[in-house]
Length: 270
Image (cartoon, rainbow, N blue to C red; front, top):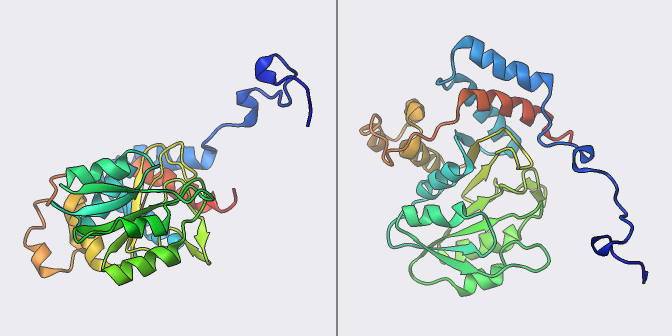
């Protein structure tokens, strides 16, 4: 072991690069700029045509049937929670370490977060501890994939099957990570993620949810994505197509959608 003084105590620094020399994030290219300018010049800032193209591309990239692009990760998580039926009186198991939106949107739906411990190897939620916290009121488990690590999705899906629960994957910190060949976010009943400027996939401000379940998809649309009601097939939902159930307008801005398409196109190159 070296006896040299640590740099923080006046020793010689090992790393001499300044912060700007490390590089900046996100990587913005002329392709991003032209995509955003194209939206401005077209005057289609409040439309959904570009957003819908991004949703199709993102769903294909994730390996899901459906995707819904939202204005931020918080709203994507909110829609995902509503999509799987979380509501008043429910308990939802959620990890102790995550961004606050994973918990607070439960409160907005009248549900109660129940905290579970972490796996010390991955800092993702510990399946065994999560199962110990299941009660008759438990509705779902939120699995947060942290720092690029994938949680043990085999264990969580087995728990969900045995107890009749839903699994929501929050993969805001792990875009593109895989569990046994499948992208995180595509394994549970619904996935949701932030794609704001500090995330691995960065678009300024934005969020997205993805699912294979049409009912989850349509409930998320009805909750806060009004323009997409044209994609709703459930006749009971169609009755209320012009009145968002949640009263929210959560859709993604078209400039964000344009940039997101470029970022997604090059994401696997990073």
